Length: 465
Ligand code: FUB
Image 1 (cartoon, rainbow, N blue to C red):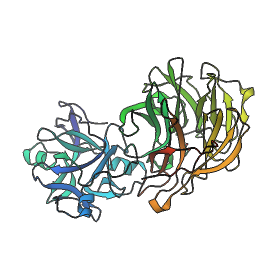
Image 2 (cartoon, helix red, strand yellow; image 1 turned 45 degrees about the horizontal axis):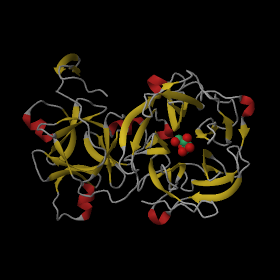
Image 3 (cartoon, rainbow, N blue to C red; image 1 turned 180 degrees about the vertical axis):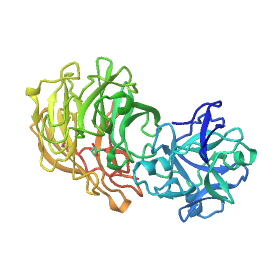
Image 4 (cartoon, rainbow, N blue to C red; image 1 turned 135 degrees about the vertical axis):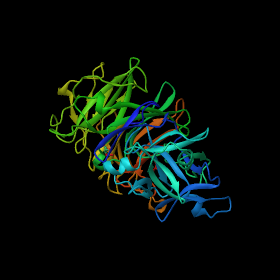
């Protein structure tokens, strides 16, 4: 992010003359990513709200109607343009952004300009406990109210401006009433796993046009409800020489006290086809470093797209790498977890397969699951097969997770499955179009129960809000 220390100078060009103006004191502030309301510092009782898409500062009280309370509630989420800043998502799934120096709410197009316009960096406000929101792409401008309209104005270090641009985070007028999404904001392809008795969640960072995201975050929890955001664990920009973007579908496996993150990536220019890599760390929360300095699987090395890796470790300690869009493959990994014998690669593509292979074992039965249809389709869904070994042979059992239109749930898929430690209780993590305004590049992560019939087949999964 561009916020610099108190004494930094901001260079401003005015009428052909380059002047040096003092930049305000801007210690970055950390915000809880959760539903919040933002109350004006100098007009207590007035809150940031949107009305007919325009941002304004409006009075809200306990007796305000439900719509007013919803419109005055924003979920603070991972910044669409930077994980060190924030975006503000409305209850209708729109994002607070600036346009022509006015604040308004719009659907996320995922393009670079929108994401920057909808990202704000938090700094200390005019009074203790308050914050001020600095534009990500215009760091000399802040959100303020003027005549009770919200504008993005050039910062002036005077009491009036400082007060007009300061807000207190308050309890949300419209609190979250749903269990999902389990982590606020746009995250897809969740790999949920247990490491050292704790749940870890590794998703794709979503909200980018063409899924062009560049980094992965890790989250952890003891109860699948309260999650700690561990920040960025691998960033293609600085960390991976052979990939710039398409930071998709991470999967983490542990062996010999180390943690291996399998991921896919593409280059911004030249050969843009996806390749698959592996990074290693001493902790589940990184930092991860590219283990090979080159792809583990190169584009074109095998047919199908080299994306969506997943590693299953069997009870005998042997690990298997599954991957592929269009074609599903499996290969036993060598003990180093970063190499394999190419002669042992097998194609295991079942009927209906598109992508996102996932394998687990229960009571000696191996379950091979995958996603069908395109992630942009509301018919994206999960199917599975069973078999006697990690290599199959597989018998297709059918669809277990699909859209639930009565609840507004579309496109649930690219999932993972985890067993609660020491139990026979199982959970499935998956993404779906963000409810209510999402689509195939604006997806959110949900967790629901995965249950079995007495014969070991999987019961249809009920996706919940
Ligand atoms: O998130 C990017 C891609 O979308 C994943 O690799 C696919 O599985 C699909 O979910």
